[in-house]
Image 1 (tube, rainbow, N blue to C red):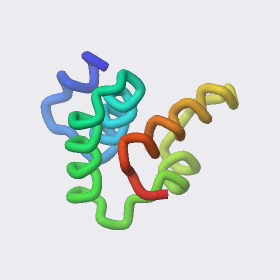
Image 2: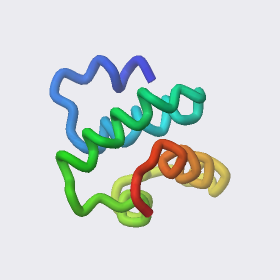
Image 3: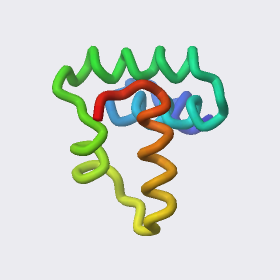
Image 4: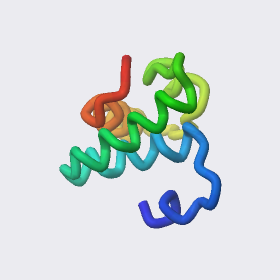
Length: 77
């Protein structure tokens, strides 16, 4: 998570990953704040597209864990 917080110019991808990190840690207010930033930057954001297009995790359980965290953060399906 620290690496994502240090990115000087955050795009929707960094905000989405931060949202997932915060959600996984139970820090829901911070996760929702990051989710709002994602939607501001990419109004058509969907977790389905993000997982298909932007996520390079090979293990199915890692992909599922990330998807669940993105949804917990309040990002649209």
